[in-house]
Structures are given as structure tokens and as C-alpha cells.
Image (cartoon, rainbow, N blue to C red):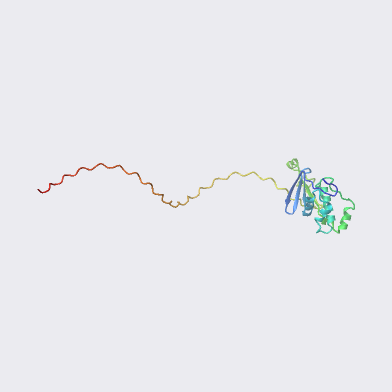
Length: 209
């Protein structure tokens, strides 16, 4: 496995699901669900441990200051433990503000990963607590500390197959089929036995003398 500037996307203990133009990643280690937008997901999926940061930047070459954007995305992936350790190293200086000044954009223009912590089974059973949100569902905040909507949850398991329905009524009797063709004539039977001889006829009259 390469190291240094060849980021490698982590695969272990992650559940990944595509939802429209977003990618949801559930971390089974931390019980956190991460929502990646299209650009972040594109870079993350290209992190195969063989592609350099420079080539990753080329994937977003149609965007202004793509080098700054890609480096920011890699920092986000590393921050949320979505990269294999020790496969990505970029200078931490200049500070983010300096990078944003170079990019000529506000912080809101950079893509951020949004995350939400899922309650464990025990927390869910007890009703849970989100740390002061009136006992409601877990929430999370974006980079500007403004509350944002969490990512769509993962699709639940398929339910059990329902019972077989009742047998429907018997359908109407079909029409009588056409008469079949006449069969071949049978063979001639054997000749019957000879009948008995008939009686002898009477003697004829005597002729004239």
C-alpha cells in the first residue's frame, strides 16, 4: 500500500448507499452516518491508494481553484476517518483562512461532510437523549454552527412475506371443442361358416309316352 500523497479510501466496517446525487456512509465503528455530496464522493471513490493528489485534483479541473477544493475534501475525509491512516499528508499551513483567501471564496462555498451519530440499540430502547434537545432525535450542525437537516437514513430490512391469500372462485366452463376427424375404416372381418345344404327338390312329372 502506498503512503504519503496517495490517499486510500477506507472500506472496513463501512456501509455505503447511493441516494440520488449523494452518498451515505455509515461507520459501524463510531455509529456515525456521513453524507457526502457528489464532489466529495467522487474524490473519495477515486482514492485507491495508487492515485496521487495531483491526479485527484484533475478530477475537478473544471472547477476554479480545484487544488484547494480537493485538498479541503481530503482534509474532510481524513477528519471523519474515511481514509486509511498514513496515506494522506498535506501541509497544515497555511491555515484554512489563507487557503480560502487564495481560492477567493467564502467558507460556505467549500464542500463539507455532514454527519449524524446514530443511537445504539440500548439508547434507542430507552428513548435516548440528544444532549438537551427535549429528548428528540439526534441533530448535528454544519461548519457555520447553523443546524442543518440530517442525511436520509438507510433503507430498513425487507419485511416478512405476507400470508397466501384465499383461493379465487372457479372460472366458467370453457366452450366444447370441435368434433374430431372420422377414424379410419376397420379391417374386413373373417368369412363366416358355410351354411347347411338345403332340402332335395321334388321329382318332376313324367314326360309323354
